[in-house]
Length: 296
Ligand code: NAD
Ligand code: MG
Image (cartoon, rainbow, N blue to C red; front, side, top):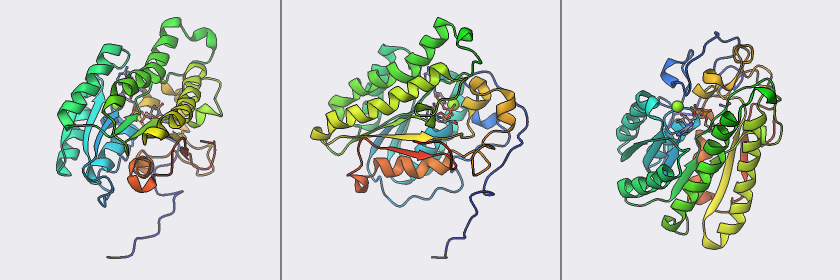
């Protein structure tokens, strides 16, 4: 094997300024400029998840897509959930999972609905022939300068997506999870260092970090691990479909010591590490990736 080339993390990926751009929510990765890197061309597996069966919400784009590609290339069959409006992104992921020689199950639907969350788990179990990795990654983030701009409907939307859906999914999944299985939540540096324009979103991430820690204690005796991933600013559709102001977007990631946003692929290895059985002593942990600023 040839030695790997050293890469300077500062200049490895695009830096601000970025072009002003916005898409109707939930946005498509395929329409972002520059295109996010989910590891399509770069992620190499080494059998770390051979035979595993994973369900990933928000698996069409962003961190969920990076995790889906990496899981498949590590040998897992993967079910992804996404919104019907994201079919185009989702089909690209399905093709990538299949190209890795694994089974892909596409399950569109809105996670704000409890009945759908239950069906999602049942469809994933049926499609994959079991379930042992659950990644609660889907999220709703909309920037609002003032708490006065957040309607009860918007607040409820954020809570339903970010807090209720993982609760419903975990409850439905638990009876299927054998010892050695794991649950992963995508939280955020916002959990501990919230920005003023994300009043509702940031508190859902504090809740996510908290459920990771409580559930880890509850499920360790059953041999099920629960961990979280806390990204900093990552170049994903969520940011260009209402998650950030245009001013923030054009300088996105520029405030970090690294001077640029992260790309979804840079977190793929964390999702793999937290799911792989060689990481078996890690539970109740939150692993960060934020370019040098922010805390997990
Ligand atoms: P993304 O837009 O690529 O992924 C979010 C996904 O959530 C969407 O693809 C969509 O499929 C799903 N989703 C949203 N509402 C849904 C609903 N009602 N029903 C079903 N699916 C729904 O963006 P991303 O940044 O990769 O987001 C993934 C996770 O990362 C989110 O939990 C987000 O809060 C978190 N996060 C992102 C950043 C960042 O800077 N991008 C930073 C910290 C945490
Ligand atoms: Mg998406």
